[in-house]
Length: 632
Image (spheres, rainbow, N blue to C red):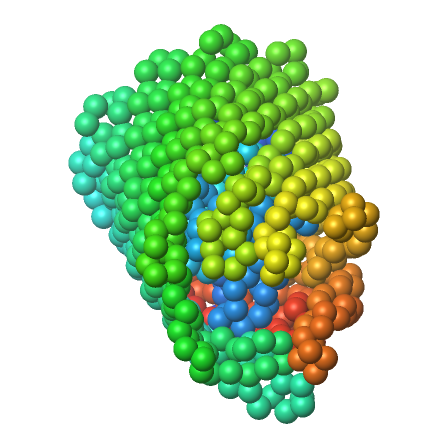
């Protein structure tokens, strides 16, 4: 590994000397007109949307080096992904503005995916490789009016690559790093005819990993926990007539690896996970009218093997969404649609457990009327078990000038009870109500220094009622608790000069859980487990010569609390405090002149910091990766 690093460093130094007079200048101004679709379900620029959005571009993804999807998301403002520096065999939990992972909806090309058999229906992000992602869009705050259940804290929309302009384009990468980690992918895309475009991608990653659980003796005698992942994605865009596009697709992933028994506890356990996600999307455009329709099936199978036997879980989601937009006038646009979801999983004795929800929704948009934009939406949901509920959203924004925007939003969200909570073998309660939320935020964005510096600030407040908890063996799952969170986010993006740029953020988060006992008495506690009150993050990118890019990123997280179920004390719950920590990562790449190859190197935990994300579990030390990316 050290030879790879020295080789790449030598190549970087050689390229710097050879091309010192050839500079690759960055844009003089920040990109104000990046296109996103998640905030409104139709194309808008960041300048036009009424909601603050994070866009992770393809260039950002390629320059993530040795990261996977959870690790890339962890570097964004307002997002915390636990286990992002842990053993690759460990599942990651995404906290968006402090909310638990089950309150963030994951989309692929605008269509919901989840795992009904998992805890809270949470989808495992490790199943999706970065190699076929074109862009990631993140919208914070309640998005249930547009996207339905689970979009309480926000949505993460993973947008896949489209076909290229040529007949055949070939892309791929190959890298090797610490823990014997090998990652490769290859893809072909293109335009077969004027009516047919295609994109196919295959990736494989494997690693010996390191022990997920921490050895309490300090001797590091626990066995390493590795993994393998094979993934395939294919999509074809058919355009039989100019105004109609039909896009069938298939997303498949197989992930297997080792895992330990618990905190500080080694074990020779194995897991296997399989995702199959076929579907089709249709778009018809005619003047001011656009019709979009999509259907996808998400099937997940999970197998866990221990010395006590094997546990199998299988969950399926059928999701169909059809909506239309109509431009009423220059300043008014209407969107209306209906969403149907059916979840099912295999219960005891192969019994099929199902639930369905049907949701019509609509939104009216006011666009750039004397600097004012706004959206007002409403959604009605009919669930086969609990009946009806509804959500709304109102999000205005006002441009004081072209470069100063004020915005706010107020809305409600919901999360349906999972199949395990309704019908599962432990504590099932078919009378559960949906968890419901109220969300408010306000903030501003401004561009200064000739649009080279963007500053943003927002305040948010979220309350989730009727939280479903497991009360006791006698009561099972019930609606009982309330969660109140609030926070502040500050962001900055700065083009320092033609060759250097900086982005940074500061997040403050606080929250409390209110519980009610059998007598009606309320108790309040600070329960933002593993989520720091204060966190900083920053990235400096420099381009000293043509083709050469170097990026240094760092983060700081203040102390957090965690829970430890101590086996030496009858597994009683104990609260522990995790120390604050700082960590730095370094990435560099060089594009060979007049060649389709880019050489890159990525170093995680540059200074080999010792820190803890989850009590009783290890985190990576200094870990370097080197590789090559190509495009023909």
